[in-house]
Length: 273
Image 1 (cartoon, rainbow, N blue to C red):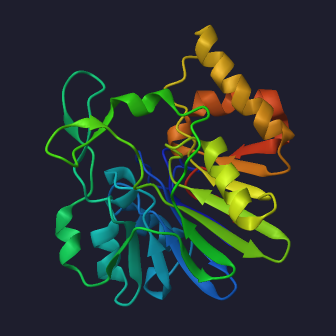
Image 2 (cartoon, rainbow, N blue to C red):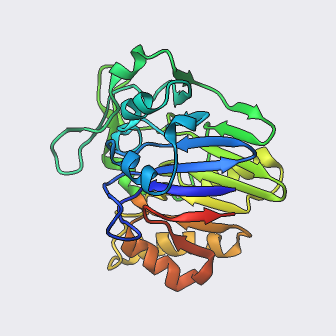
């Protein structure tokens, strides 16, 4: 399995474009998968640098209805004339941020719905026994505090986002069971637990953003939150790769705590799992 990081907040070197976003290209079992597209079309430039031909992608998945994960979809559809793009059915509900007391749009363009290759999902999908797209995260353990300023409008009123539109991917190859998440708004530990339930065994690798950038490393309560996550990562048999909304300072704190259990994946990273 090969995973190439097409977009992330930081670059492996200066040659890679960066933005607040995430995009991963995955090759496994003859399949070519695009997981998220970042905020803009910049991921296409990085794909070229990494010798990724986006026209060959078989299927694309957008993890949730935020622009920093689905903003590049329209550009992808111009590069690829056959792949379907899978969104959760709630992804096109209006989404916004209200962190600083001013409402800012955070969603993806509804114009995408006019494209016949956009597929709306409201249940788990087994593309086959080795590729599972799932949502329905029930756990409430260590939900990121940053969720509180993220809003949705399902009923005509703005309210705290429930993130039911968040999708995650399980990829199985031999003894490797890889979990891919976009931002882990439902809590990375809850997502890992759900993946383990679906697999009936533990995941071996976890890749994605863990939405910890709001953690204040000078605040004792915040540090206890992060420490609880570190303890669970340490107990886990999985290897963690992270970036984007995890926050680089928060990643460094985790790295000091749990060492080689976790690594950072800037744009330009190539993982062979």
